[in-house]
Length: 85
Image 1 (tube, helix red, strand yellow):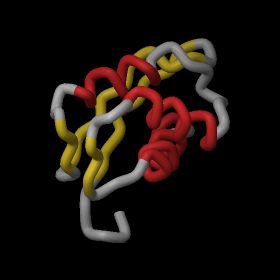
Image 2 (cartoon, helix red, strand yellow; image 1 turned 30 degrees about the vertical axis):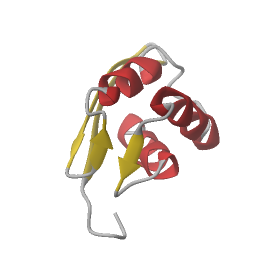
Image 3 (cartoon, rainbow, N blue to C red; image 1 turned 45 degrees about the horizontal axis):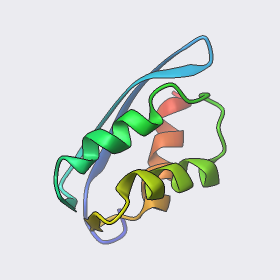
Image 4 (cartoon, one colour; image 1 turned 45 degrees about the vertical axis):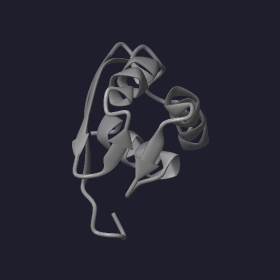
């Protein structure tokens, strides 16, 4: 990340759909368990979903949670990179 934070996505896909998402890193999220909601939101979506749609989903999953050191757009960019590998 530009500000020195680390964000990692482990993504598995099968038949064009995301089947598993795990997000780790040294960013801050409060409340912390909101990360599980983000992972849940991204599981089952089409692997070829557009980056801006992923950012919107992350924003929706975060709700009022505070994400520090990364943005929903950062998450979307990294997610797309991970799902394309």
